[in-house]
Structure formats: structure tokens, C-alpha cells
Length: 197
Image (cartoon, rainbow, N blue to C red; front, side, top):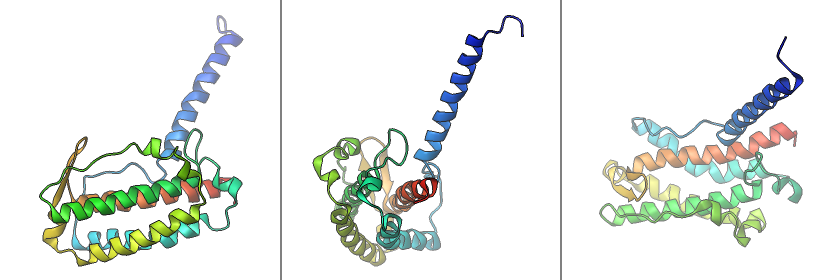
């Protein structure tokens, strides 16, 4: 290997390590893959989405069951949120989504207000016991599932407008929150599997 020094080998090794870290972090960031809005909603698929919304409180409670404070304060990936922040984020996000559904059902294509979820995750209430947000999630999902089960096909076609991503039908938003529920639950269950908790 004439002209190929130890310094060059270290550089190649470091570069491979950095690429591997990026790939692993991307996988850890999206354990079930990224959301893909390119799907046709059928009645059967919609029922599956509604069931996910209904089931999330139990599935999330199972995912965090028995975790101590040190485990709850563990990042699910390097430079990611802690398990505690993920639980509080789900409460914040799904509370917002529930309100957005009610706006879209009672107004004509309302423009919703986005928020900085990363900043919300740094506020002091995101360090509270997870049980506080689990109660919110349980209540919101009970009401949300009830609302979803009362909606007609026409209701699911109603729209809202997000200032950054444009118009969404409520059935497409339901697909997003089906994914969101599974996505964040998988952050926790995958961490537990990797750590053998």
C-alpha cells in the first residue's frame, strides 16, 4: 500500500464511523419509517387508524411500564428526546390534533397554528412525571376516538390548512396520527429492546 499512510487509514475509518452513526441515528429516528401521505383511504383503513387512536393509551402505558426515573430520562437515540419528553410530546401533539379536528369540523378550512415542538419539549412541564401526560393522553384519546367514530364520510373529507404543509383532509390527518402514535411508541419499545429493559 505504497502512498497510503496510517493517517489516511484513520481518516477512512473515521469517515466510515461517521456515516454509520448517521445511518444508525436515521434508523433510530424513524423506527417504523417516515410518514408517507401517498395512500388511498378506504373504510377499512380508516377503521384501522381509529383503532390505533383508541389503543394508544394502553400501548403507550405498556411501553413505559416499570421504567424508573433514570430510564425515563434516557434519550431514545443520541441527541434525541428522553423517554419522558416523548411521552409529554405525545400529549402536547395529540391535544393539538384533537383541537384541530374540532376546528375543521366546525369551520370552513381553518388555518391552524403550528408550534415549535422542540421548544415545547424543553419547557419545565416536560420534566414532570409521565403519569401527568398519560392521564391527558387517556382522556384525549377517549374523546378523540368517540369523535372519530361519530364522523361521516363527508366529515372525513373536511379540510384544514397548515401554513407550512398546505391543506389536509381529516382522513389524511388521521393517517398521520396513526403513524405518529406508532412512531413514538416504537422509539420507546426499540430503546427498551436495545437496552434489555
